Image (tube, rainbow, N blue to C red; front, side, top):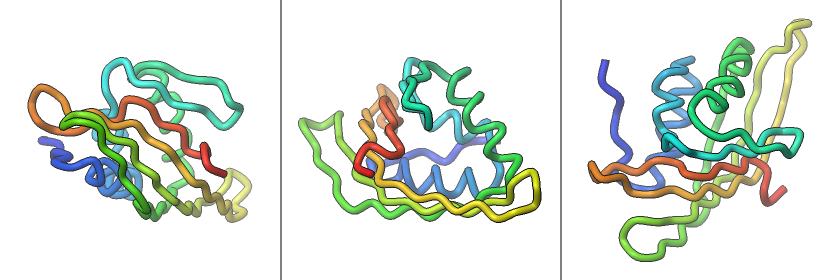
Length: 128
């Protein structure tokens, strides 16, 4: 089944919210460039789709609900943008207890050859 394209930098977060809340790992991963980087919770950096999948697969098991709010977008040229995303997430831990998380992300998004935008660098807690 076909992924919805991100026509604008903001669409990357709108679609991230949709795919995460839908539990759709494959389409979630496809929002990222092939050689993308994701800053993990421990501060280490995962690179590429396999690393992205390894972060989100266990997260989806908690049946998370995320709300993304794009608060600012800074563009340079036609093909590169910095997205400021304030997000809140709720989930259920393995012990059945509720999990609440939030962060202020910075995301570098790039327009691809097909005209759609994908995430190049994602730091979910870069701004706190």
